[in-house]
Length: 218
Image 1 (cartoon, one colour):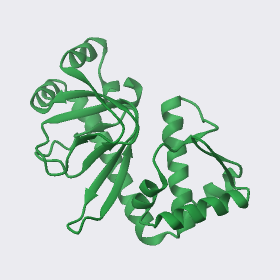
Image 2: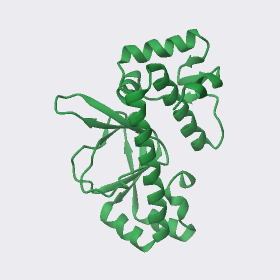
Image 3: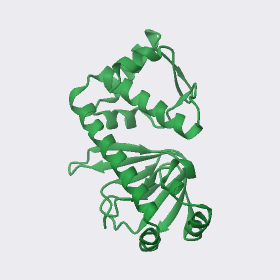
Image 4: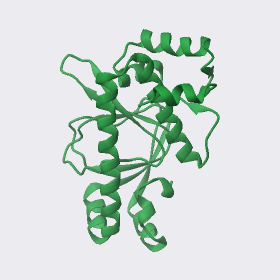
């Protein structure tokens, strides 16, 4: 996962030093990595699996704010408490760092801090795109934007464009991420299949008409 994360800023010796301060953590499906508002005492780098990121509302409703894939770091903002919860969608494997130790390592490696700033800027851009997606797009445009983005992210992980777009998260997760109901998500995806824009397969979907999605996506 080195080429996908901030670790790409480190040389071989520095990477070995980083590995020395990491511990492997394994989380089964639906197990929470950390809870919103808990002390953010660790930093996580996912090496396998998918996690959903969740913000909870006082009345019990939730907003899925994103999905963490292999290579993603959680906790780079270095805030003292978590602003969201992270829950394993599939079994997750992550390198876990004690925050104080990770901060000390970063202080000694300014190139790592620079890479962290680049990733933080990318996360901010994604958050701004998500605001537009929630507020201004139609249900069809929201689904198309989500599927195109997932294809880009899996392509980056695989190193090539995959035919299958993996969707390990359920339709309720997708609905909570897009600000839609699960009924709307199902209706739009099923209509896309009837219109021969995509094909639904057991592990995800396959695009039939890429131009259709590119035209609709944010």
